Length: 255
Ligand SMILES: Nc1nc2c(ncn2[C@@H]2O[C@H](COP(=O)(O)OP(=O)(O)OP(=O)(O)O)[C@@H](O)[C@H]2O)c(=O)[nH]1
Ligand SMILES: [Mg+2]
Image 1 (cartoon, rainbow, N blue to C red):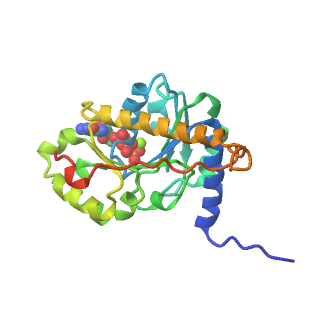
Image 2: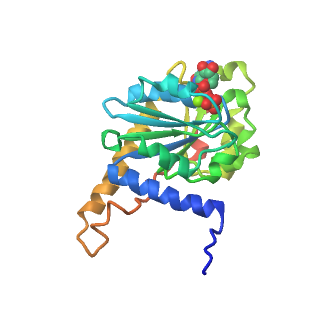
């Protein structure tokens, strides 16, 4: 008997993630994976972002070790919400997301936000099938965190500096963040915002809309390709992650 060995947990996870992405692509859904430390403001951001995206429809898969509190907060705001309890797990896996996707009617959704478990290390190692990764850093966490936890920020397509309404009363040195990001990830878009006051929310929502347009454009271009040149396989093929250039870090604003 030939024994099959799954080489690593990550490889097995990646295979499921690819299948998730293909499923989302086939349904025309743009998926974003939100990652940060606990309490950085992921759920609050979604509470304010989803209404701003109307008439686009959003679903949320939210990961927490215990409770349905985040799902309850988003109930009535998102078109659909699924809470995934990981028990002792410090991150979501592609398999958990696959299970969550089966509960959603993807045909009625434009964006899928995946709120990962609050953790600055574990979630970044696991592809969930998202198209874009968003890392949050809130001002109360301190301006040294990019250098201390680089793996969270390295793969991010967008980095959100959240709770900037508090920066005046905290010793938050944004220049330090920009310097560290120039070494860790100069590709990502960096946005400063406060979900509480609404400051900086408009550029974030605009960025989301742009990403959706790009994603839809890539999908349409692939559909237009004649058979034999890569066309015809859209339903099962993975779309590339939308490319976008972030601003020059030296141009990034300061708080
Ligand atoms: N001052 C201020 N507080 C905020 C802002 N955004 C969120 N908060 C507060 O920060 C706390 C945590 O916010 P959540 O949105 O629950 O954070 P989270 O990242 O979803 O937390 P977990 O799901 O536990 O990881 C709450 O008390 C929010 O009211 C903001 O922009 N400004
Ligand atoms: Mg939350």
